[in-house]
Amino acid sequence: MTRLTAALPCGNIRLLMRLHWLVPSLIALALGVAIPRSAYAQPEVSSTAVLGLEGIDVPATVTDEMSEQLRQRVSGAHDMRLVSGKDLVEVKLVFSCADEAAGCMTLAGKSLDAEKLIYGSVKKTGDDYAVWLKMFDVRRGRIMFWLTETLPRRNADPAGIKAASGRWLAKLTGRPVDAGTIQVTANVHGAVVALDGVPVGATADQPLAITDVAPGKHELVVSKPGYAPGKQQFLLAAGQTVPVNMTLSSPSTTALSEVKPAPQATDSAEPNRTAPLAVATETRPGSGRDGYRTGFWVTFVAGVLGAGAGIKYGLDISDVNKKLDPYRRFPCMGNQLCNAKGVVRPALTPAEKNTVSALNDEGNRDQTLQWICIGVGSALGVASGYFLYKGYIDQDDEHSHREARSGLRIFPTAGASTGGIVAEFDF
Image (cartoon, rainbow, N blue to C red; front, side, top):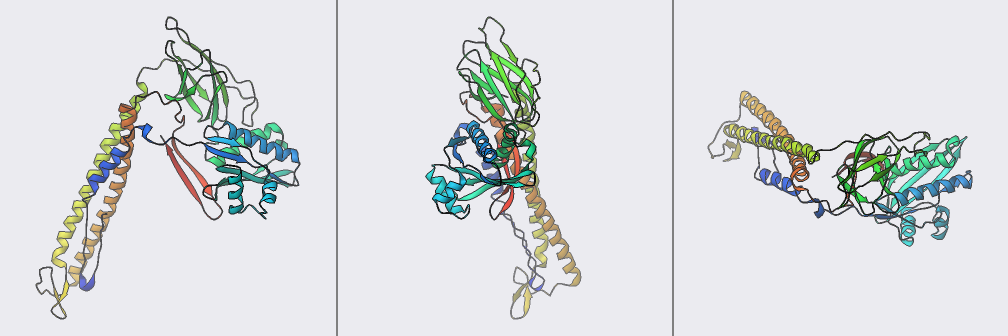
């Protein structure tokens, strides 16, 4: 740890610096992110139970529809497995709970063999409905996320509740609220489906659902040995569900693909929205890696410069220490003052004290800049290691179940006694 300390007993100021760990730390950070992705644990699928919502002056049909839509959302999520749940009121009665205490919900989750619980209540407020929902972690015995939202009575029909349930689950799990879904079918079963270069599954009798897809431009590639791959680029609107039918042909013919407009209502509040038509384009082999390779060299050079600047400011601190040596005073031989060599020296004059103060300010400023450079250089080192792996090392297409979404996500969190934000970076 680099440390700059200042003490002024009898006019004495001392600066200390330790830099021996700087270079090994940067190297360790760069090497750590270069580990192949397969070495990292894959995201586990959590068993989740949705307890029937408790209604207060609310028709049972409304709470039942909300509970069922939430269960369908959980069942369709790629990282969640729906397990049978009970009504919240029934759980309270079984475990003699006056409220949703952490101990009571932990026992309920364990009895259902669930790792996560989704529960809450709905109360009528005027002509609308106030909805409270919570995501409870059974293992940790605490609330992970919670939300409160008012559902207008005009939207309390099955279509409106279906649209709202997607928004509720997104908030409870930290997923993008405006994420869309792609449903892929093909004329060949067992073909690998890749979205934006990332394998996400394989075709089968039922459509392959790719959920939590961010709005924007995407490329879908379906391939299987013995067939020419099908490729398609298209735009996905916020909250949209797009069915895609891919046709793979023999190598002697040109692969054809098409994207059909989505005639059915989407999960958003606009039931007449249809999917934009896609424009097929060919992608130059390897072009997907060019951005990673450019990013590697940019972050690598910037990281080296940041580390160099940190070392430079460390040397400046060392120079400040040397300049302060003549002004150091220590008690010796009674009430007299001596320098570091044990020679009796007079106390510092006002002018010398001003010089010591100026040097101390300079040293503190250099230390602040050194820490900034070390932090920025370390972050760039991590990024360059990731870009190195994605641009030059990662060539394994056998992992067909990787996450289709990546990037930085920041969302608020709240618990029973704490609150704040959580930042996630998936790669």
